[in-house]
Image 1 (cartoon, rainbow, N blue to C red):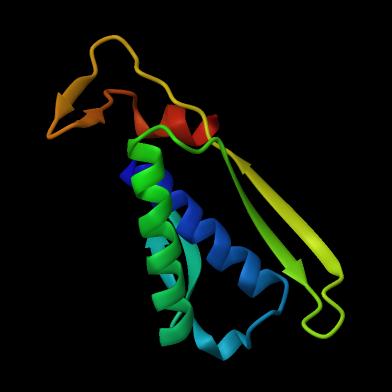
Image 2: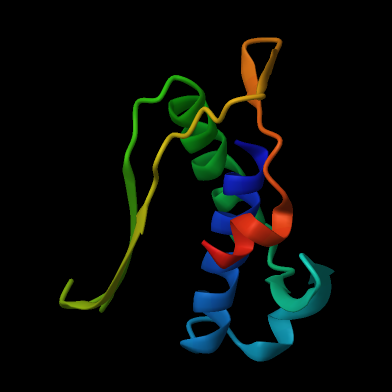
Length: 115
């Protein structure tokens, strides 16, 4: 679940940067998963993502969500400009372990990244 949350966080940050939703100077480059990723330094964005992704984490742990959508809309007209759907699938591979109610997978990170 932590890995999925990390991917969602960095994916959302990348979209916010690449689409110019926030000024480029409000992002710093960080290394994650062997990649240079731009991450927001804006406290409001960080707080919002922490809150939203915290809720998604709870839903993932309870297997209560199968898709998350990021919608970019015009603030004045509410017109949807872009929509990003993140499909979430649950996998309990053989050899996985349960620790504190959370399934700990054994799949290699490089395999996950290719998927």
